[in-house]
Every structure is written in C-alpha cells, then in structure tokens.
Image (cartoon, rainbow, N blue to C red; front, top):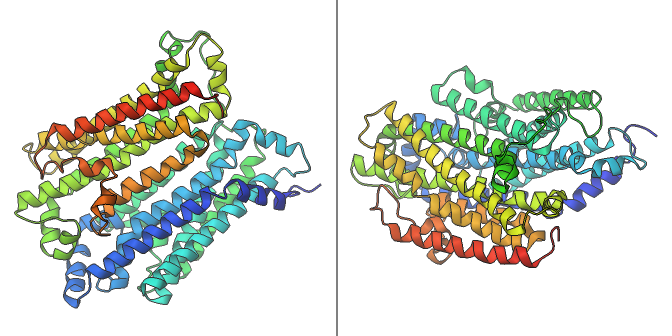
Length: 528
C-alpha cells in the first residue's frame, strides 16, 4: 500500500460531505460579484463619471486602503475590479481556509480521521485529497468569477487575469490552512492561525497600498492584485503566487511526517490540578472555551475601526470629486454632514461584521453536541437550561465587549488626526448597532435549537444582512426585502437622530427568539 492509496475515494467523500457547503461559497461569491459588477456598470455610465472616479479614487488613500492599488480606474473594467476586490479577495481566502481545516484538523479532532486511516488508506492520502479538492474549488471559483465578468461585458483578457489571480490566491491560503492544521491540537487553533494570516496579510496589503510603499509586495494579496487585471496583465506574477503556495504545501506535507496522528506540533499545556471556581459554572466554562475566539474578533475589529476612523477626515475631499460614489453611498450635504453620513455607513459595516462573532459563538452549542461533550456535561447535575444560558451569556457579553471595543477604537483612531469633538458620537454610533447584533445571534440560536441539522445555514442570514447593509443601496434592493434585516430599522446615527424605540423593539424580538429557541432545545434530544 502506497502513501496515497485511497486518495480518489477520499476526494469523493469530501465532495459528498460538502455538497451543500461548497456550492454555497461558490454561488455567494460569484453572485455578489455579478450584482456588484452590474450595479457599478449602471452607475458609471458616462465618460465624465469615469474620469471623476479615476481622479478621486485613484489618488485617494481611503480608496487604496479599502481595495488596494488598482489600475485602469478610468475604465468601467478597472472600476468594477476595484469595487468587488474586497469581497472576492477575502471570500476566496476564507473559503479555502474553512474547507481545508474542516477536512484535516477537525477530522482528527473528532476521531473520524483515525477510523478512515484504519482502512486501506495511505498516510498522506487524506491531506492530499483535501489539497486536490481545495485546488479544484479555487480554480472553479476563478473560472466562475471570470465568467461573471465576461457576462457583465468586461474585457476578456482582464477578466481571465482577474479570475486567475483569485484562483491562485485561493491556492495560497489553502496551503496556509494545511500548514496551520499541523501546528495546533484543535480545529479552533488552526482556524485562528490561518485567519490571523489572512487578516494580517490583508492589512499589510492595505497599508502598503495606502502608503504606496514596499509593504504592498510583502502580502500575497498584493501579489495577486499586482497581476494588474485590465491593465498590463503581468501574467508572470501568477507563477509567483502558485510557487509560494507550492512551497507552503510542501511545508505542510513535511510537517505531517513530524507529528503523531491526532496530535499537533505544539501540544496544549497541561491544565491545573484543580479547576477554578469560575470554571465550574456554565458561564465560566463557556468563557474559557471561547476566549480565543472573542479575543481574536475584538483585536481584529478594533484595529479595523481605528483605521477607518483615522481616514474619516479625508472622505469629504474624496466624495466632492466623485459624485457617483457619493450617490452610491447615499451621502451628500455639507462637510460635517458628509462625515456624519460616512460614519453612519462605517458603524453599520462594523456592526454587521461584528455579528459574525455572535453567530460563531452560538454555533459552539452545536459543536459541543456533535463532539459528544454536551452529553457528558448534561450527565452531571447541570441542567440543560443552565448550560444554554451560560453559553448565551458568553455570546451576549462578547458582543457587548466587541461593540464597546470598536467604539473606543473609533475614538482613538479619530483622535490621532482630529480633535475630541466627535468622541461621544463615535462611541455611541457603534454601540447603537448592538441590538441588531444580538438579534442576529438570537435567530441563529433559534435555528440551532429547532433545526440543528440545518445549523450551518445560519450563515446565510449573515450573508443577507451584509449584502443589505453594504450593497443594498447600490443594488437597489426593494424595501420589503431590506426590511428583513434588523440593521435596516436602526437610525443611521450620527447622520440621523438616535431614538431608543427601534433598538428596544429589536431587543424584544431577540428575547422572544431566545425564549422560543430555549423551548426547542428542551424538547429535542441532544445531538439530534
């Protein structure tokens, strides 16, 4: 039996298990690309608007911070690429990361990998199969993006270059996830390492593009974007990204041989002989299990909030020369009004991203069930109600801490370039998003409680609120559709006066969803 024996069977098994997850990722990213491309094409439909965009966005530090250094911004092709880059870049990286960790480290952690290896399966068959599926998914996504751009009517060569750059970017982060899966003992640690690499390299690319310095070329995002789709098309840079991915894949393959199956290169520290009193409570246990998740989201979102706040004073000049972008963002008026409206947009964006933590935290309940750890806990004197309230308490506290951290970071980032006159509104604007964040988490809990087998689909809720908040105006979504998002009902503070009633209604709906979900959890079997 060779080291790759059984690879074909494992590839089919992975595709069978991900027959819903993988198409959702592919359709979500390509769908957003199609909608955004069509919306941008209809907005910048004159030579004057194209020239205005190139003059303002091309020379703007804010634009480069968001989307990196793009080329051909005086053409509709370059504008479409610039506007969709942030979604497609991060989307392909996250898709590759979750796919690889789910079928490597998570399989070992659950014990299923050991059962598979007990059959006629080579030592390297499982990671090799995952690598093949990840490579195929990245190439397929690149092809789909290319097809969408061609359907929108963009240049064929540039469309192929843009899609190929994203395919190679997916290959690189699949390799990063494969290497991260060899380092840690658990899937959460692997996701933390791989996610940290995605976040750090994206920020490095953004800072390098904003400062127009060498940092831009340190990041794989910069390499992929340096292909200059719709510009000079530097095809040779694709080979650089593929080569870097091959090196990291080779490192991951070598690391597999340096550890025991089911173990990581970095072993977890032994625990204390006796648990603390707090760890003996459902809330304390939940906080201990989720502290890494909470800390990662807090640091990442606080850094993002600080960076956005620091560039706020540049926004009036950017939008003054680009009325089409101002119209797309629904921003107009005096300089103070423009700043207030932009802050309102940033607040909603941060609130929507922050709700991802709430959903991930709620899904920990389902993870504990599937790992049979919940059953062991509930075999003690711990009641099901107390266990659930402890976990939901961690979720609620975490969302509150993240909202407060983002608000404080906004104040700190703004004080670095301006005075303290807006400090109160900066902090209050982010905190005003907390009711919507809590409601999304409550709806996720409702799904997990009553429809546990469909728990993964709660991410569709997150995708919807993101699209509504960030692209609802540009996509011209009907108000009946947009009203399904809780963020739609909150006042756009500070551009609109803050009123407590919408937030209180959302909190009431969240409490009702939690109560109904608790009833569902008590009526069904654990693990079913």
